Image (cartoon, rainbow, N blue to C red; front, top):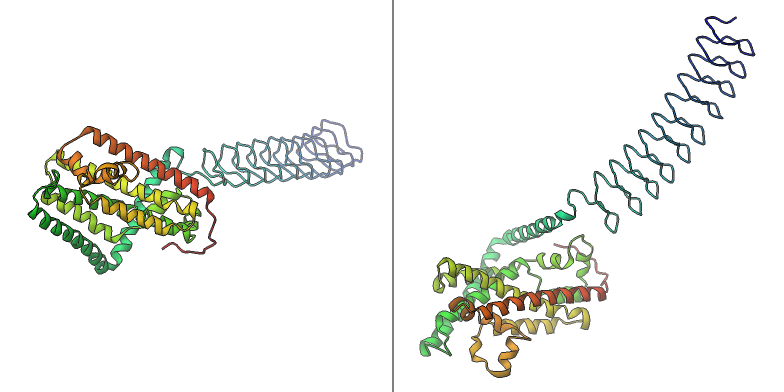
Length: 411
């Protein structure tokens, strides 16, 4: 008997209730369904699609079944190769059949999930989260620091290094003040001997005691700020020879900048303070004089630092170059504390070209006392050339560097 039925009866005679479709092949009932019955007679509940070959039910689904016959929920695309479900997904499945959630991009090659991402995954299948930028070579994500934000990130890194270096120096305050104080006194002793000399000879080739004082202020102050902020520029040969460079190569930071900014010289703080103290005694305190003195410090520090750095990169090419680099550094620094006009002929030419110490020692005359545009332009160009040369030598030498296999902990 068929109750409230508008269709034909089923072959086996069992009843169908509130059904408008054809009966099941085996005579099993179909309840509240408008689709065809299962081949095996399993019931279909609240379904409008065709039944799968194996007969498991489908619930609230409008798409085709996967190869294994497992259901898909709220999905309108073809199932994965392995028959695993996909949830709220409208793109093609990953190669290995793993699910992706709330994604509109293509799957990863390895089948790893991709979350809240609109770009293609990396070659290794590492996930990217809330990222719309390109992947790095190692597949690391670029999060909140896009390519446009890299300079800001580098600046934050350098400022953090300086902060940590200063905090480490201040941990032993007595040692800090004694070290910086002794260098401050040592520099004043040199000025004392120069004052004795100029008391006997008031002028030497146009140089007076005030010029010598500003020479020492510029040289000591320029070396001071360079060695305080980038204290490893005169230790690079040792770092290379002992294999300590491995520590910096393993960190995701610019290698050269990381090496230079990772150390602060305590004695150089005394040099920097000495430079400002001598400027306060013998310098021009007008706004113009202060700006020229600041530019002189920048010029001197840049020339000293990058000449020394270029000398230290010789360790990449000739092996243990610590002794040679140390001699070049000390010789260069010593020449910068003497008036350039005492040197004549070929020596003077060398001091303004191959070993540009004369560019530093001539600052009190060519910049501070008499503003000479030709000298300023030449010294600025020389500083830029030295900077570029040191960077190129470092990068070229880094390709030749062999790891020392040294296990070290950066302090």
